[in-house]
Image (tube, rainbow, N blue to C red):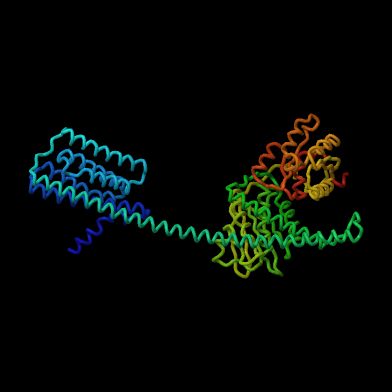
Length: 584
């Protein structure tokens, strides 16, 4: 007896003990099995009782047949054919409604059976399309039976009053029992959904709280870092102004190398932080950088980048290059942003007496760049989290928590990966790996701007309403050998342009009275100036703005403008004027 009871207890779970299934699929299988077993038992019971009382084979015979077919539903589920089991249940229930409804008339209580079938469709069928199709079918069957009954289209079986009452009693009891089972499963489903919803709300609340804590830590760190970098820039610049006033504002002020390097290091750090914040805003807005691959010399690029960081790093920078072709094809600007973030991190966490090693090497398929420091390292339990947004050090000044996730995202846009290894107390290594594409062309590589190439005789008009930006542009253009003219407004720009007939115009995207784009329209309508290349400059690095500027102009430079960026922006239009300083 116990074995039989254990067997009966396992029957509703047939089909759930195989391959791993989603919880919803298991729930559907259990409901189908339970409904099939209960309905099979009721069919057998009612058919037996009615055979003993009415001896009507059209009732009992069909009932026994349906009882046997219902037992096949768990077997379908056991074989993994849940859809077949569902279809069997629905067809049998609908057939019994039509058959017994026409045979026995109102005694079968079709309304209660319709409620059961509609509820079962809502509970079991996942697809909204099939769910409402099933409900429509059930309601149609109900209406047809009503028409048959009240229109006397089919004569019901002539049962005695006692047998008719018996049919009604068993039919009503069977339908009520099936509805009760359906309500039981509905209650379980609702309770389960409530528990899942409560758990989800709790998890989301914890995630939001954690994100807010990360952002608070990030903002505190960012505020600290910005103030730290602003302090020497502001303080040293103010000191230079005071010295100039003390000395009667001479044309040239003697400034120590330490002051210059401190100003440069702080401004470079602020530029890196600004780029990180802008990159984060793009990523959170779903805007990603589109790589623009071009040939470049890895050795030249690497030394150029490290040249600026030697003034920032308190520890030596060591370079190892092995197996790199003369030039590779990739997006040097995106690689620069990755390297900048990795170097900034390495410098921030390096310990006195250590060193930072930058290794560039190549395999047959990949270009690999590694940045290693000898700092305190990253604990193993935190290593997986360092590429998450806003995950930073435990105190202000230990990073914004943005550089690494941004670098990984850029690496992915280049088709590569960015990974990290670390050992506590010994340091960390970050490895960038991107597909290797060698440039086998024999075109000569343009020289860097500090290698004595000048655009001698080139005339450049810079249109910018900010005096400091015009002063910086003047110094940079003079270093590149250009003759310069400046304008602070659109009217002055057009006047100066006609006066000097520039080879290139540097145009601020935002001007006080009209936009740079509107001024470009005036230049393009001017017969004397329409051929002059226009390069937009702006402090806003918004992707849509850059795209618009490049569409209408010949280039775009984002402030602050590095000397090498200005050089390469001018190079396509002034290459014919390149003269080495030795040959000038």
